[in-house]
Length: 95
Image (cartoon, rainbow, N blue to C red; front, side):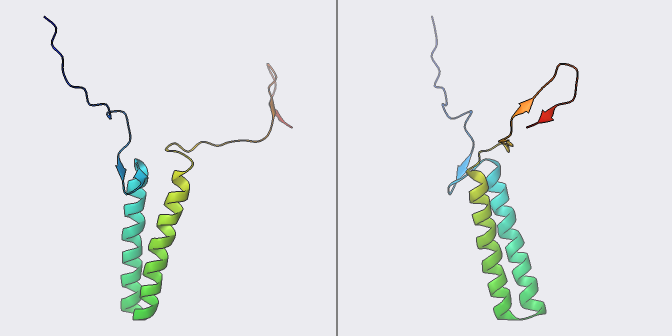
């Protein structure tokens, strides 16, 4: 007699929260906390309005940076546009 168990299909998929996937969730949280800390320090040390501008700028800039980096994929891959000629025993030449 064979037993059937329900299989969760999303096991190998990255976690998604508010459009951010996998490691970029942590990047977003990091930029959010960094912006809050920088804004609070600027508000307390310099000026309230300048601190608000720093807070909004840092959070918005960090989240936009995270969103643009996410478009490249979860793994950072270098995409070289040059042609490599590999010799069997010599150094490689870049054309």
